[in-house]
Length: 248
Image 1 (cartoon, rainbow, N blue to C red):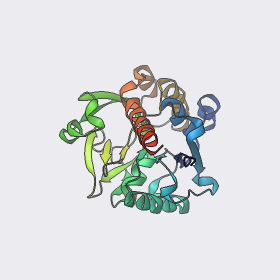
Image 2: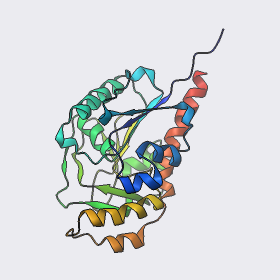
Image 3: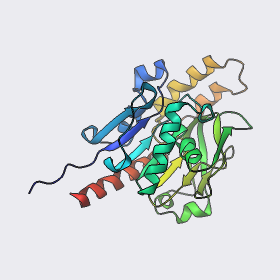
Image 4: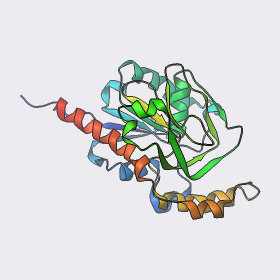
């Protein structure tokens, strides 16, 4: 009797990286694949903006939801479809990781409030602080009480859904990691961003917003690799591998 094929990891692509970043580092799914050491033979990428739609959640081992230059508050059709898919996935406790837009979309889908951050953009390599709940979390507790992460976001989770537990914050944003259930969590920061990606992003952002109050040159000097935040992505991928092994 032959074994059933292993379910793939779904990457829900919610946007396109800007051309200068994509030319050097690939698109958002490629960043997750590289930083997460993900087996490309076990991945399905669904480009939501291109009109693609995922199969029902039970067809996947887990899901990663990427960042985007779109805003959750635009309520675009593809985004609302994805929010509905997230609600279905929660019903079967599908392992999920959302980052940046994916973080905000998961929070919105499950009843939270998302909008522009009152203090504007949070960008660069910044310090994240674990909260007491994070120090007890099965996945996040492996991190030190303070660690660095790479961020770019204008919108934020203003109010987490009632089902969520807040695990970490930054000085700018009180909702940096949210836990929604035993298998689903999200990060406002980018665990898939290396220092090289941030160093390409910051000059591009500076060109897009020349009147912005952010000192992008100073931010560029502070950029670093963030292996601890990347470790969350690696741990998520590793947990899927263990589940696959058990299923096999």
